[in-house]
Image (cartoon, rainbow, N blue to C red; front, side):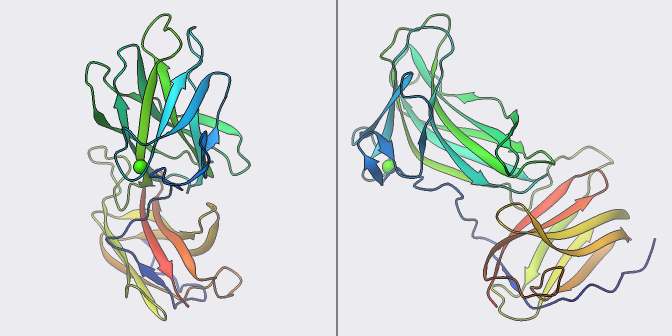
Length: 287
Ligand SMILES: [Ca+2]
């Protein structure tokens, strides 16, 4: 194992938002509407297949929810609302949304389509649907890890046919969406092979000057420690090399590869091992 390398120009910092993980979705509670048929910040996927309506009943949070009605009665044609969110590659994410399903003929569903930074399709997470045997608000959760080439997540809230041919007119409601990093969690845990990085942190929190990144390794590993901005671009590399098991600390000065001070804002600390398992921490830099 090699010794700790001297870090490139660094220090100053990022404040670790240890317990505060912002919702990455915009207008997640559907309180804002451009017009009664389009919530602000959301895209209507196909207005010939699904009609979206501002709804004040049922609504889980004030004042509105988003109602979605199927306009077609054939197989497939499952459309609804979507929203692009910038993501980091190789990182865990969780999408949750509340769905009110009072129609036994349709169901609500959430999924994530991963796209590159220029929005090219990569893959889809698969759908988590509501249970049409239940009436009332149901919490739908979809967790997935972003692919290595991901730059955007397309959050999808759709009204699905139940099975076979579903008549037009079925309706579900969505409210209180949350899309967030899986924060600090190890993406994949395989016995004997996990990164086992623990407590990846940046101190102080919030930080306006010198800061220190710390983490622990359960075993020796080759790791890369990078800082990503919200567009998914790596703006600083803090370390790339082998490390022994144990606690490790690296100073961070809030500077990019060229030594320039990073703009104030939200960043992600990403610790990745050779097997591309990652631990992610959202941090705030306030120079
Ligand atoms: Ca609401």
